Length: 180
Image 1 (tube, one colour):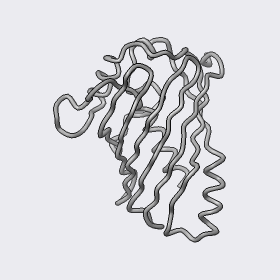
Image 2: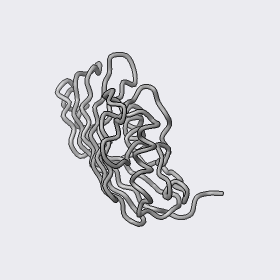
Image 3: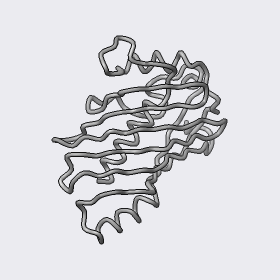
């Protein structure tokens, strides 16, 4: 479960910037090329290059199919959050692209909508990481000089334990220069 949530959150962070309607060809999907073009249209971001520590935590979990004791333990663990590090370069800030936040191109995820205005953004993404499982993630956030914050809402279906809804946050802060 933790691995699936981290995949979803990393995918969200990967695609998290754009300006306007990114689906230029009107096919209902935002391709990696369309996302990169939209992100570049937004211009330079107000973010300082360097290594960022990103904490992903969930404050609300609705999982009716999970026994109460297990759900309580899961909520407690997820509230603590998961932390990952990522290097953001000057080139990425000058010309933001789909790789800006360390995400990988992943055929299991597609961007449904993407909008970046200045240092604010909104994103909807659908991921199908395995089998019949599907995650629809909505993300909204903003960027500052040495940090960024994004609110997340994920609806997960096709899970062996039943459907689940999660609400949480991504908080990232600059912790120094990128490692050599």
